[in-house]
Length: 332
Image 1 (cartoon, rainbow, N blue to C red):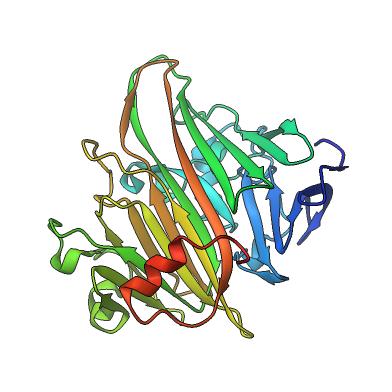
Image 2 (tube, rainbow, N blue to C red; image 1 turned 60 degrees about the vertical axis):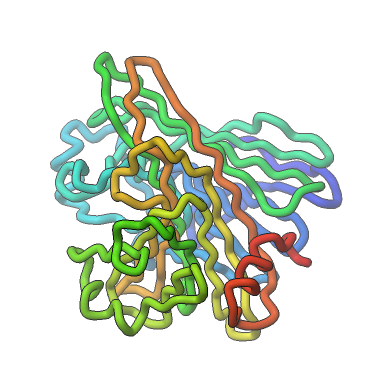
């Protein structure tokens, strides 16, 4: 990992510690991002004015998995169970193709190589690249891009087929966010789902809870994630954004994610954006999808995601108020 340095009054970076992990801390104004490349190339922490938005699994904080020396990857996965870890990460979809019901170990729990690609007074670009997954032949690269003259940050997610056979996968970008909060999603008028919202019937109490936790605000869906109860819902809108308004105790914080939508493409889960609420821990997931792509050996594709965090004066009461938040600059 490179040594810390000074970029400008707007952006600084340094090495440090975060919940027992060696990390890479990026500070710009009221925002701090924490990179932990040793655990699946994650943005493990995201804090705004000192409030930590991202969840980390208490039992795994500070832990590392010696994946490279593992000979039988699938046996190791079965022994580990489902490692939540936390933070913001990139998975492969669909979930139905995961072996042993667990994310691919080399992509989710193994270390990524970190490289600073650009470091100037107003710009920071950091790349985190996985090793080639022994189960799928895929390689994931996550490139974080911050600029002092634009709000928020961007993450370019790149998926490359390093195997010798043609294959098909989709990028699934998951941010684990602390409850309580409300998540707003755009609905499609032409959706095949009831009310424009897909219910993931296999996820906990999704069917029974829908009437009490899924609401409408104009053309938007509102998902109430106020307590620990397992459910999951998604939308097939042509708008690729998802907005969480989080109760930080002393105020409200907005967290926005957006990916481009590809109208002619297939999406493995039938959704471009999804919300999962945990029944075991106090977190929710804001999930974005890239399209399914068939990749020849050596071929790759990218999805660029925009993220931002900002103060919210009050709970939105109308669709117009929600959409106004989408255009707000961080900190304004």
